[in-house]
Length: 512
Image (tube, rainbow, N blue to C red; front, top):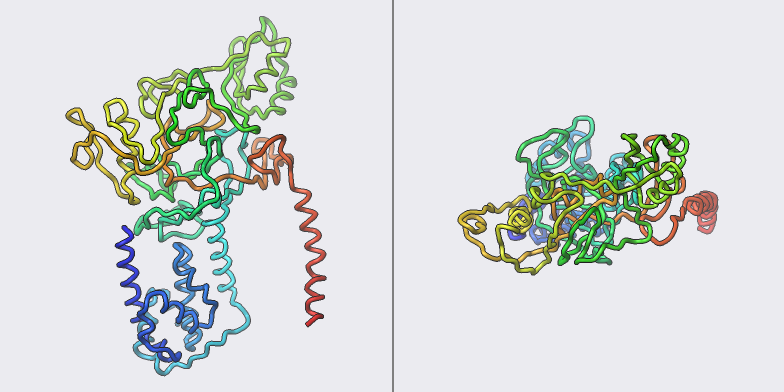
């Protein structure tokens, strides 16, 4: 839906608001026509139910308003003496129409008591706990867990993160009807946790940082269109904010030209540079001298030190997924003959030109920038087709028909020789270059798909051994030098707060 269509819905909602509440307004001492004035009517209704004025702001926040609208219904029932379980159930089952019935048949006779019981109900406490959590989850910080090895050794499987949505700016929910804080599927019953429509147009609040090269980024996986609540379904297209979450490193910015040569990433013709804590991994072949082998104890000590989880014995040596430091350490072993990177040359799997490119020999490829004008050719058509079909429409769940025929690109039946891009695109790759399903496989990440920036590891557990990685608990994701844990300062602060808070409350009570 467009913003104009949503504005029409907003106006229609005000008419329904008048039908639902106009006589209640009059019974509370306000003119009934107040009920049809947009926004002001919500302010007056909030005064009628004797709640803080800022409650009305929550009615304009997608997803949160799904909780606040029934809350307002129940508050109206309470102050007008219709607060029985029967009244509440009828209101919910009729989606508020029961209040319309009361408004036109009983509002003039109902008592108006705007005072509330000081004791909050269990349901009320739960609702506002969910509202608060949803606000933090949507606009502040969201917890994630690292499920795969694609960012080893920078982020490890079993790292539990807080992802900041404030850095790049919180994105407003586009899927308006969904279960709060459930991304894709309702647990246990395994059904979809949202309705695809209606959708809000894309909108993002201002952030305090631009997305920079080498930032670790959480984003909605652009290629997530065919898997839905554990079932493969041909042709399924998900809303942007309901696509699966991925976390990768942003190695290519809008306007960059990117290439992978012999496993080495090049940006604008130069080898890529990385932040201090980056530990790239590749597959290596380790050849041992004739008749010699490493002892398992020897390997285990080195592999534990460098977080090596994938390795195997092969003829005359070993295959292992290593960092450059681990590879250099292996070269110092007396049993070692040679250590070299195992380069992938398999064709047929990659984005863009699968007939020519592989994981370790990829590109060059240009990353579109907002405002760039490109001439569409047979060569770049496979690279930009998905962008033109889905990401450049300007509306969620709206798609262009894009095809190549008669030597030209056709968009919705019209030939297009050149095209100006409407948004920025980014290139994401995992630090574990040999074991990462990233942009090399599925292409560009649009700005609309960016979710946030991982900032803090609050817990970390080795899923193989079951051991807690204490050196990673309460550490920052980015930064220079060795990781520093803030666990003990936090524990000391929490203990002090636990001891001091009761004393402070007692002193404040005595002062009264």
